[in-house]
Image (cartoon, rainbow, N blue to C red; front, side, top):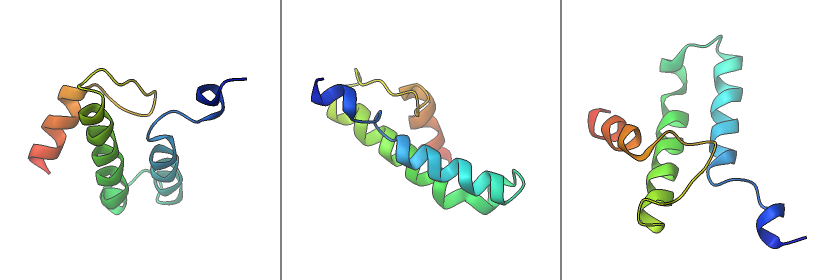
Length: 72
């Protein structure tokens, strides 16, 4: 089995941490702002490192990430 297959998708840990926070806080996103920011920063780093070609089920598309980070 290749090493790629055994690694989880980029930013998956951050996405899981966010989900745990949202579940714990009855989907009150304002209580999970730090988790949202960590996920989007991870996604931005992934897109930057791959010249925008990276893919992860944990990340929205690059434009959404960029827009969210500009506005928050």
